[in-house]
Image (cartoon, rainbow, N blue to C red; front, top):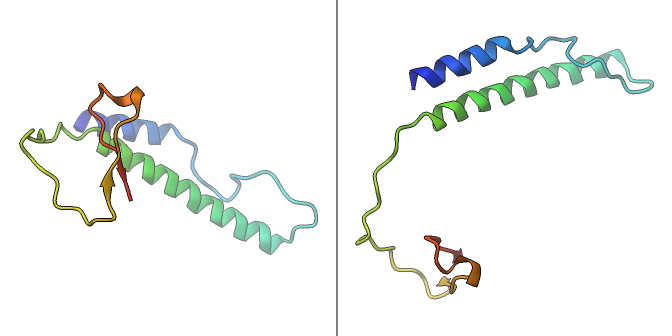
Amino acid sequence: MAVNQALASAHEASLPPATRDTNKAHFPNESAEYRAARNALLIEEIKLRRRLEHVAAHRRALPPGGEIPRTSSLPPTPAHNRFSPPLPSLRNKDTLMLTA
């Protein structure tokens, strides 16, 4: 996990900072107030995207989880839930399709 954290940190350090001058595009007749608010929102969106990428790197770095035993069973389902037969293209695959 430390390796992926180091890679994520190195990647983040290589990105340009999210600043007020990030967006050079302007709409015709936009006010300075609109542009300031739009740029502030853009900075927050960039920060959010970077945070999501950081969390995704941690998720990818997780060690393998426990194997589900073949003897496990699903809890009883209500009458309106049913298992659909597998599609022909999925017959020989370990796929479970649930419909609600």
